[in-house]
Structure formats: structure tokens, C-alpha cells
Length: 204
Length: 228
Image (tube, rainbow over all chains, first blue to last red; front, side, top):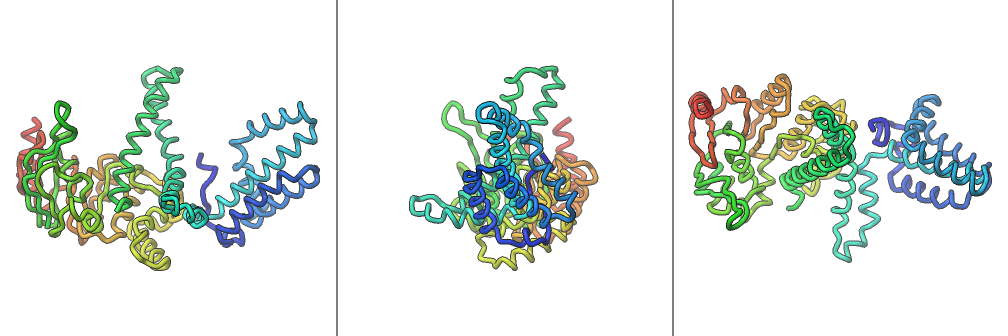
């Protein structure tokens, strides 16, 4: 949980690039991976992304270490996809697909690691500005995004509390004894957060 | 100056209605005011009246002459509110971003915001954590972050609803000392009765009513007797 995801301060070229171009590059890379069908192309794409890590990081081992931590929580998904493609379309297709996904995940993580959340959200708010015409406040959408990001560690923490309470009462295997209190706690937390947002003048 | 006139607050209607505050009238001009009482006595509702989070079903609440029902926005710009659970109050993913959040839409330039945020974090010993994710802070640091995020908007009144209840003794004292040094008027709800020793005035709530109003020593003695 704590290894993945959020911004890490730095002064590299990758850090200093504005959030807009970085997000645009991510989108282009995503479109580009669809067109890859040779192993060497995938290899080059991966090398380019890893080079980005090298530039953003302090040393090659540290960069590789960071990159590894970004994909580690997802390895089982990549493995499943790889096996599926290997069985249905052969190992070359499997390597191409998994390699493309890997590149995409790594690049997305690199953007998140080198860009402040607020800058990313500001880009989204700018891009979706036209939705104002159909009555949606882009700032609200931005707030929704940041609250979503903030909610991940909060809900993970609530889940930990529920699991502990469950163990203390010896109900370790019941799914319902886990899900119901978690949802209740999450809703109560949402209430308190709404109150805090109102107190900070969000609705004014 | 806080003026509360004949305030009653009721949740719901008809059969299921529940009155949580009954006929409270009080004027507060002192700099440091404590609010104590049992759980469910109405003290949390009382302090939520002060920034218009709760509007009274009967009666009137004014802060610096502004009616919370009609001029809620202006009231909330003057009144900072600090909650018990900092996790619910921290809305942005990283420390500096959360402090900056309260300064949005105030017509400040980006550099001005940055400067104020840096100053606020320095004041509360969080400067080294500016770019850290908020969820990695300790409980005490989270409450200090919540406090910095409120104070950076320079409110003239700071309302705190049990800000030290989730903290250990050291962090509770730290928060209390910082609060003691503030230039603002402070209304503090707490179960840590010793934190109120230097306060100017302490209100005691019991069963939806304001039952005692006096010096910290008298009020705390009254409250102890009430609970025994």
C-alpha cells in the first residue's frame, strides 16, 4: 500500500515536466501499445519507460527497485493474462501483450510518482472544462478525484480495523461480518468528511 | 463575540423527532472558552452551531454580528473548525496540498498560497513532511496538519470538537499548548478537563441543556459531581 502510488519529491527533468504533457504522453503511449506486434518493438518501449525511471531516480538499482514495486501488486494479473494468451495465441503474443501492459503500468506509475496529485487533477479540470455547458462544475469533478485518491488509504485503514475487531471476536472467516461493518464505517467516515468539507467552505 | 439566543435544535419530525439542544442562551466574548459534558449532552451540536454546520430549529446564532442562518458563508470564513478525527478532516492526499486546499477560491496568487502554506507547516513542525502522503503521518501529526489547514485561513474564531480525544498525553499537551499560544478566540470541547485550567470560562452541558457556566474550577467541580 505505502510502496505504491503517490508523488515522491524530486528535481529531475521528469519531475519538472508539466503535468499536461506527461498525461498526454501517457495517453499516446497507451494508443501506441495497441499498434505493437513485434517483440523488438515491445522491448524498445519497455527500455524507454525504464530510461524514464533512471532519469527520475538517483541510480540504476534504485530506479529498477522503484519500478519493481510499482508492478509487484499486479503480477498475478499479468501472469493470468500471459498464460491466457500463451495458450490461445502462442508465447510471442503473450510476451507482446504482457510487455505492453507492463510498459503502460510502469509509465502510469512514473507519472504519478513524479507529479503532484493536485497538478494532475488541475489538468483534468482544465481538459473537462467544456462540461460546464451541461451543468457540471469541473472543480467539483476535480475534488471528487482527489477525495477518491485520499479515500484509498483511509478505507484500507478502516478494513484493517474491522479485521482486527473480527479477529478479537473470533469471527475470522465470515465475509458478512467483514463487509457489513466496513460499509457502515465507510459511510460514517463519509458523513464526517462531508461535514469537514462544509466547515472548510466547499459548499459556499 | 458569539451570541446565542433561545436556541433549540431538533432532528427529524413528529414521532421520531429527537431534541438534542434545549433553550440555550449564552453570550461569549472571552478569549478561551471550554465546553464539557457527557457523551450525547449536546455539546457537539452546540459548537456546530457556531459555524453554521447546524442551523438551529428555533432561536438565533450570531458570530461577530453575522447570523449563521443567513450569512453562513461569511461566518465560515471567520470560524475555523477542528474535528476529533483528523482523517476525516484531511481531504487532500499530501500534507502541503491539504493546507493549500483551504486557500483556494480566496483570490490569492499561487506564490502567495505557497508562501502561506510553507509558513503554516513550519509553525507546526510539519515542514519536513510537506510532500509526504497524509496517511503516513502519526495521529498527533495528523491533528497538527488538520490544525494548520484551519489556521492558514486566518480565522478569528477557532472551534475545536474534542481535538485531543484520539491523541496520547504528549500529543494532547502539544496540541493544547499550540492552541494556548494562538491569537484567536477559541472554543474547545474536551474530555481532557486539565487542559481547561487556564481558560476564562467553561460551559457544562447535560441532557441537552446548558446547566452550568463559570470558571474552570467551578465548572469542572460541578461536572464531576454531576457524573458521580
